[in-house]
Image (cartoon, rainbow, N blue to C red; front, side, top):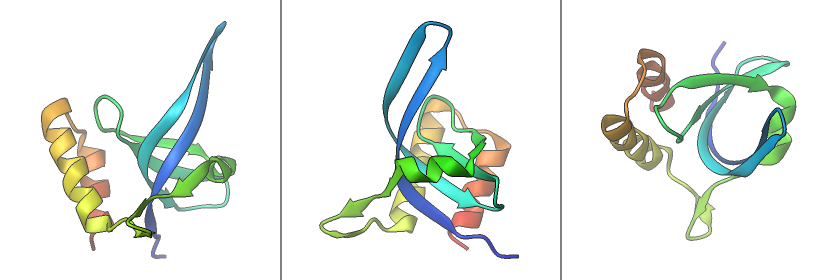
Length: 100
């Protein structure tokens, strides 16, 4: 089964105890099943995370000059970010799959 990888702007809310953190992050999203999806966010070290599929409602497509943001360009930026901040083997594989 081929899965599609898309570029999204992810509005997240994270809670740990009494602290609530929220914001926007750029993410590559791979929806591989009905319950979970794989997400590669540009935040710290690039690692692939699994998040519930319901989170897709908090994500918007990224655009550039009114058109969808080019995936190859985004992968190039993710790789440069990973080179500077660290990247896991899973994230490298994720980026390879994105441009195939």
